[in-house]
Image 1 (cartoon, rainbow, N blue to C red):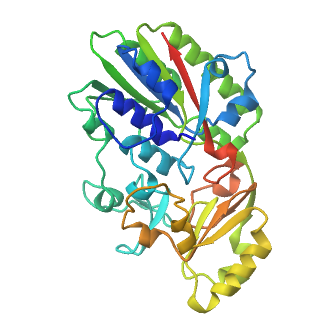
Image 2 (image 1 turned 60 degrees about the vertical axis):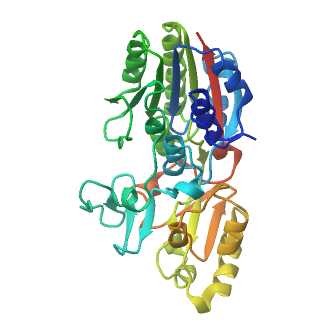
Image 3 (image 1 turned 90 degrees about the horizontal axis):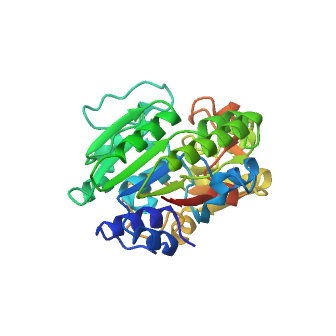
Length: 370
């Protein structure tokens, strides 16, 4: 099955930027028609199951759903959006989670914004973020330089990507629609890459089928239908970085016998936990974890995790040797295990992502030809 890396690589291939991938045939066939404007709209968390649960089959987005593709693993924004930005799998780009441990600083670092994950204080490293220093990559916009006019539309505060011809920060979803429509009026060949953090934000705090989720998904449906009605000579591709699943929350600190096995707090995500275990407690940890959480999690040791190519196939980034601990626990049910070091207000989440369920992994590939 194709994944989101194939989505961005199929688009790059259309502009003669060739990356090794499995082309998405339906997408390639539409790109081959050489539309003046190619628009890639990525809506955070808007997985295939989210659409099916909140829209009717006659609604615009489902009517134009071509197929579903897989997210990358972990199915989370940091890993997935960096794949869109770089056309690399997580195993190669290394940006696998919101919070990662950097031994040089002795800290867990929120790698998108360069904050200490515990203190929430900014780490001043000059012009570059810590992740940019240790895990740089060439952006798709740099790769496309001179081949097509590129536009990057993103919410204010989202880190810019090098190489885009035009960068347009926005606030609301309707601002994205406005700018897309305006760009498409010019006389150039345009590739428009647009991203927004909704519906992810709303889903986290309200759940996958809450009234607020249903209202927002219907709003997105109607907004995109209106936008497409205003366009000409354009291919609109609407997709997501990952999906969402309603979860029961578990605070690992309520399991002191497991915590006594840890060298440092777990990292990566509440649905994909990397554990660093005291050497004499590894067997005890395995037994305890499987006793408490084995029904809803797959526990792999470090070697098994890499042997199964969980992060994708490609050259392994050397930083992963630090990021992946002795064990990795992957969510396969509907439980999330959080710890103090993880994202702010995570204990109030109603739904989340990063695991291996279809709800989290399947994202829509919606295509509208105008």
